[in-house]
Image (cartoon, rainbow over all chains, first blue to last red; front, top):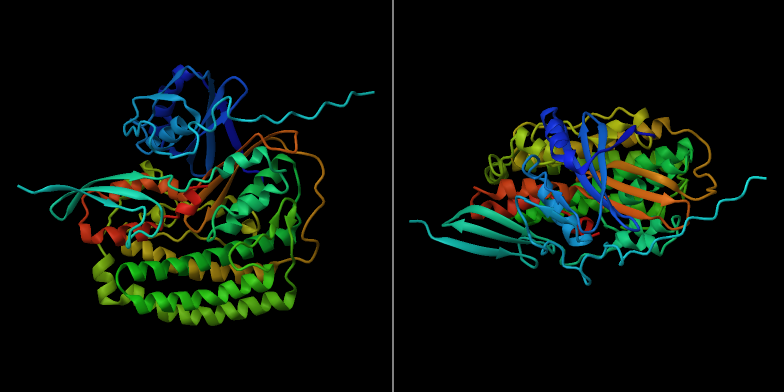
Length: 128
Length: 359
């Protein structure tokens, strides 16, 4: 299949500006995803325009705040609340902030560092 | 002065038989705000990747939802196949498209029945459920399951369908098409149905786009977004045409789904005419190392399966962004300003699937 997919590393401080630019260019917000790393979180913002799939990515430490993009893309509020509830990341100025009540999970922030078990990569075979 | 009230709807309510909750803020009979609340039955399936081998995990993906079962396993398998550079045999790609379109047909017919029930047309609901049965029979005969199919796997599919059975499926769908034309005639032309749906729950093209709408909801507002255009499975060999309407109301969403049923029947006919002979799977060796976003057009719209592996048997991350989640902001937008009596129709024509949302 191989749909071309672009993942662009960005700085957190540049996020809102770049997202505003993508909005002006006619991209739609497809999703905001988060992945737990051993000591940080990897945030990925996915956009699409005429089947061109572009992703912006940056990492944040657990104690860092992330600016909301819900002022630019109104549907971002749901993804941002989801990330807050499942990962425990603080996202500032969400237009509709559920304040931790969107997800009712048995344990709070189930995807946060400390709750996630990381699989070990297989040992590399030495080249003879 | 109008009296302001808050009406709680869900998670158990006659007009919303799914575990989602809305606080409807009303002034007399007019809804002025809708506050959604989800996650009553969140299952945490995404975290099961920590405990399930990536091959076995296709069964978990299969069980995210009943109506979209096959589409979830398809999306997951495609993502894993992509990062492992697995070439799926052509016959398996065609079979995947056939099962995917059958899933679309049965989901849309189910929706027709549920919508009929919402606007008080119980006999129409029963007729729709009756017409859905032949599709479930085809599932049972070809996969062994009626709801959870379990037929898609990393590297291909578990079962083949022989040529005679494929022709039989096309013949049965041709018969079904006749019955569906009669049924859809009621949805499209009946005065009472039009009166309940036309002009209700309007969503503009601009709002649909900026609110991230997908699937029939986006297409009913004039957006030609259809992930089958990406050409996954066998869609690159088939003539896929996104079904688009422009009215943006409940009736337009109904028309889109009806036209998509007939289009799906045609796609199956095309696929059966072109399916090549050959194996239906390949042996999978190695482990996934990398990441990929697989995008598939479910009955309710674009679904995304993201997988990330580091070379171990257990994936590091599995994320599903389902179409209902993407459509919730638009659902809130449409509910604002609507009449209270129209709320059931509006919610039903958005076709929320909470089973998918609570993955």
